[in-house]
Image (cartoon, rainbow, N blue to C red):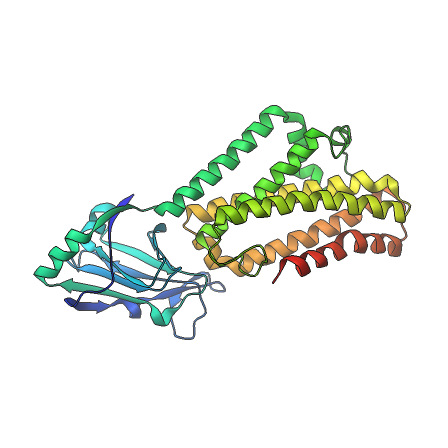
Length: 363
């Protein structure tokens, strides 16, 4: 999809035909529908309808700060690096979308409504020529959308390669039914040592999967990971994603060391491999689901995470809690534990490392 965008700081010949601020809507998660925007509304995205036929020959003028993104009909078309105004020809939009009415949305992790203006304006004849000379074609997907597509395609290609070269092991790791059973069987996986190349290959894939998810989310929500120590202003998301991949690879190996040490201390060496592979298989499946959701979120221009961020965070938290509970029942099934003994073991292998993770990686 292509459209005409006109990034211009200001023009004196703007004649306002309509202030679209009164048409702003925000998504109400409780009612699951769009409701009128009020000054007190807390949101990351506002949308409004534009009547292209009624204002034929006019321009849509959008003014917004840096790190704000524009979607038209759920397609990302522009992202701001600095405070600026953008002019869109309504006639050009009508030609591109072939609709008399379209929806435009403005999104940011820190939406600054007071610095956003949305207007239908008319320009004097001389100013129209100036705009026409400074206009240029940009692809609706924007360069960040191109990067999102590349990252997603490369990651999905890795899935296909892994499945082709190690089909049986791939099927074993990604068996959701086996992963959620209390009595789990890892005969095929345990046939290889945790440090053997087949299993290390899946650890590397897991790390890249998490890194790709971070990149996909960060491209549409630049401030989403700002509370983590690995993120810093100005860091490219690819760099951040690669750093996260390295961290994940190291943390999985660290997990194996923690489990090995604690099974020795608690004299339950029998559960060492079962615990590690149960944890890793569940983590791999969770990471796969997260990556899939990041792709869907990207296809819709980041609106899904913007509109359902709280719900998605709750789902992530519940998946971590569910993993811990399932591991409790899996270990309890294969070994006769006293409940306090098992609880102490899981505290030292699951809860304490998780608290350390938050302590180290959260600012």
